[in-house]
Image (cartoon, rainbow, N blue to C red; front, side, top):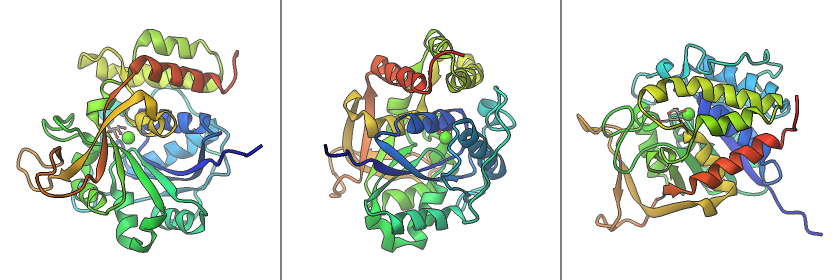
Length: 317
Ligand code: RIB
Ligand code: CA
């Protein structure tokens, strides 16, 4: 019997409630995804807080052998913008998490990512769900390793609107220069932008079903949704937006998504549009597509996949 090869991935993010749920899903899909490294970046909260959060989540998931590294605390050029109004003072407010039993690996994020790329027999997929600062730093420091990257599956951007400014989504708004470096790198980008992530929502009734699965991880996911929905409900959303999980679920269930392959440029200068991800659907600039932009999702199937993933950690108390 041939054993199906798992896709090696690096998780880079700014947990953040949806980054945390993306981590849980990646762990649940362990028969398809092999998490080779975790790297934290400043974004939803400061680097110190997002790094601590990754260490706590790894402890919760009992994944204590995956190396974790802290990346860049500030964007390439801009000042860091954080989002405590969504994620709280810790960056992961809500349920009490276990004290971390995982230490940092002693390398920087770029060094750890480069090590994984160098040592991997197969190309590695980078899942980047925060500002793209660490990824850009890797591409600048190690252009010779670009060919070892299968693709960069990001949560970021929006083809027609933003959520931090009218034109820019938070991750790209925070560090547009890094996103520009990434989209110009020649490495294929899969972009889970707001066009798809705002359709990938989970309603309170749906995440209560996840809570009722009863295992500690399912309960924690539900309690993360409880907190993350506080601000989203004020904005009128029907449920919790599963922004970052889209960047993971695309890798294991691409069939539930619809996309447009197009050339996307990042605006780094606009007075009103800085951080915008601007699609050139018709190839007007003569460039080949650099991005697979997800634009729709079968929401019910997405929720079912999330439910089954949480259930895979066991049933009952
Ligand atoms: O705009 C949503 C993105 O910003 C998500 O990645 C969320 O975690 C925040 O980082
Ligand atoms: Ca994030």
